[in-house]
Amino acid sequence: MVGNREHYLVLRERARAMRRNPTPAEAELWKRLRDGRLGGQHFARQFVVGEFIVDFYCHAAGLAVELDGQVHADQRERDAERDAYLGERGLRVVRFPNERVLGDIYGVLREIREAVEDSPRRLRRRPSLEREGAPQTAREDDERQRD
Image (cartoon, rainbow, N blue to C red; front, side, top):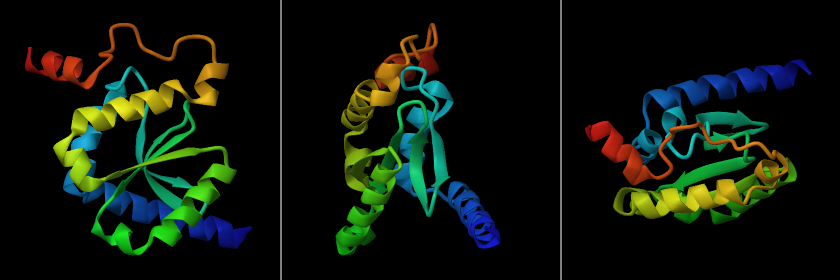
């Protein structure tokens, strides 16, 4: 068990370092997900799940959001194994290329919101997870920030 704890601590430190130096796509998406900005849902970034660090994680929905840079083109098999590992732990994984996040942020947010709404975890929890007054769309959040 000590080895597992040590491994977790290494992953946790790596996740902290990754949060301090996000990619441009991670920074852009985090601006839209942080503080419950997507329909009141809480997301964590660079979150340790078992053996891996996921880019964004929504516990209430059992959802991991992964952003894929150029390196992922050469590691599709490894990503598939990782997704299977996360799936075995009850998580749904959605992936987006960095270019899509930077070029179609509203489309990406719409797909993430749909994944949250379709979550079996969320559907089991009958009370609404949305905070009263929380923006329901990214555009709504943008408008509130401008006001």
